[in-house]
Amino acid sequence: MNAVKSANDTKVKVRELQRTLYLAAKAKRRRRFHALYDKIYRKDVMWEAWRRVKANRGSAGVDGITIRHIVEMYGEGRFVQETREQLVSGKYRPMPVRRKDIPKGDGKSTRPLGIPTVNSYCMPPNKVLEFEG
Picture 1 (tube, rainbow, N blue to C red):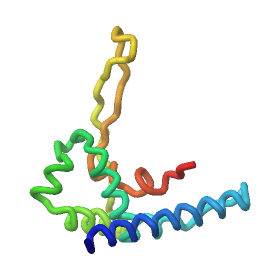
Picture 2 (cartoon, rainbow, N blue to C red):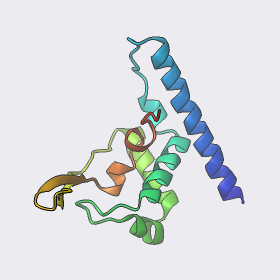
Picture 3 (spheres, helix red, strand yellow):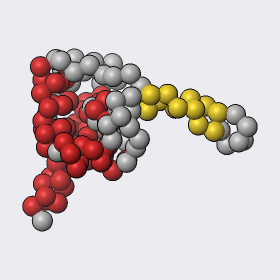
Picture 4 (cartoon, rainbow, N blue to C red):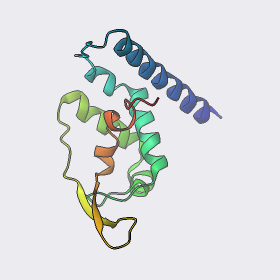
């Protein structure tokens, strides 16, 4: 029960951050946000990003690491903490994206799809600070 409450609290805090940033942007259309980086590596933001990536159940990127591997072998807490430390220290560097051609609706042609690594996909700007209408 504690894990569920904690996840819900995290979700609420992140939603409040999204809302605050949204309202500030709406109030002043020309507003520039110069200090978002410290919000990206907040623990609650990092955990919410991981929760969203984990729920997506995507494929492995160029590094071959899957969500299942992180959960079963590496540990979610360790993964989130180390990813956060990379952001805080400025050492995070995104890996290349794996390209996969997928069929279009017509069944005759394909289109490219970029598959990021779990680590890259888990970065908060990708999964949390996206504004939903």
